[in-house]
Amino acid sequence: MIIGNKSFDNGTYVMAIINLTPDSFWKESRKTCDNVLFAVERAVKEGAAVIDIGAQSSRPNYVEVSAEEEISRFAKPLELVKRNFDIPLSVDTYFSKSARVALEIGADMINDIWGLTNDGDMAGVIAEYNAAVCIMHNAKAALSGDIWGPVLNFLENSIKTATQKGIDKNKICIDGGIGFAKSKEQNWELLNGYERLLPLGYPLLLGTSRKSMFGGLPEERLPQTLESTRLAVRKNVLFVRVHDVKENVAAIKEEYDKING
Image (cartoon, rainbow, N blue to C red; front, side, top):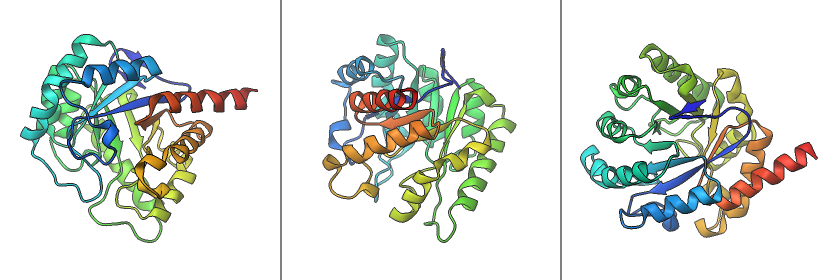
């Protein structure tokens, strides 16, 4: 997969979460214009391969903010990061207006938690800037019964939208959407069968970092997150999107050493 001027193929890479929101569920990930450069510098030093900047919380029961508010939160920080670091930059948004501004500033990828379905202009904007995209499964209502049919159909349709609008096939990855429209049991089913997304033909991104499916408080969920990252390595997942870069980079290395050992 190509993001910006970097190519990713074999292996599992860390995408570092940088939240520019006052209400993200993991308080340690909340950054502002004043400290975003320090946060990105640390993530890069610890081994992040991609930075994912979000200006809209998607935690359970979040209150949506407008595209204008989103842009006001990410525009200056994104500009600062772009100017100071040579690392692929992803922006987490489902508004095409926000995506256009982000891509104009220099973002390389749009991470859309609604998989190009929330905003009819999104795929076209991404294609216009020849950017990369992460297409995530989501649904308005919680899934019931078999999860694989709805998840696979959604992703298949969104991939079709992306390619028909002109997004480069080498710039698409997919995310099963753990924590979105799924029960705890369904999240585990998805995680344990994540390789079932591979036949769609695109690289996978896994986002489990400190999520509620692991139980307990967010600050207690690092061990389970690291175990899911090791699982991602075994299942040929290309990216893990995480809060704790250093620990996840180490977990990936340990798992590869074990596999090749």
